[in-house]
Image (cartoon, rainbow, N blue to C red; front, side, top):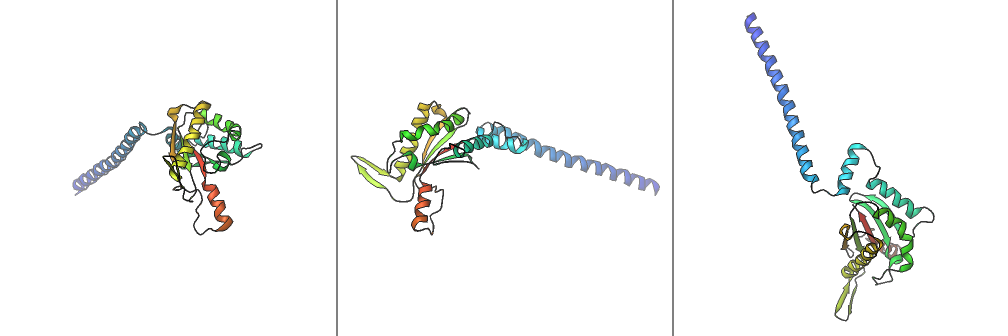
Length: 217
């Protein structure tokens, strides 16, 4: 009986050690698989997206999108500031919203030259980074349809032309064209919902929705 008991105890200990090793090996396999997936995905990941991952792991924000967002917000809001411009850190990158009332005349895609000088400190900060920049044109929900010679202007074309005008200016300012992408969203991405709004509240919402956004990512 003693020999049987000793044998059973020894076998039990061996099974316990084997099971323990098996669990550890499984965890290691999962970690390795996750590591290789990250390595593969990082070959296609954009700089901004990678920095978000890095920041989450290290807690360091120096020379990151978060630091850039704080710099742009400071320039836009502190004296003398930049009227009609707001900056914030969003889930997809740093968003710099520019009120089109400041940039363009009604229905026009020609930039008002007097508004360019206040923008320069913001553009210098962005240009000195290596981030990609999406230039997004946004209109309000008021339908636009007008025919000029053989061309038809709509909210779609106006938002795209305004984004293209800003891109042209940024290239002249010294930006690498390969860093820029223009997008015309028309009224499909409102900053403020107009649902159930009337009168002055509706006009204010529409005013906020008319914008050109630099998405730094």
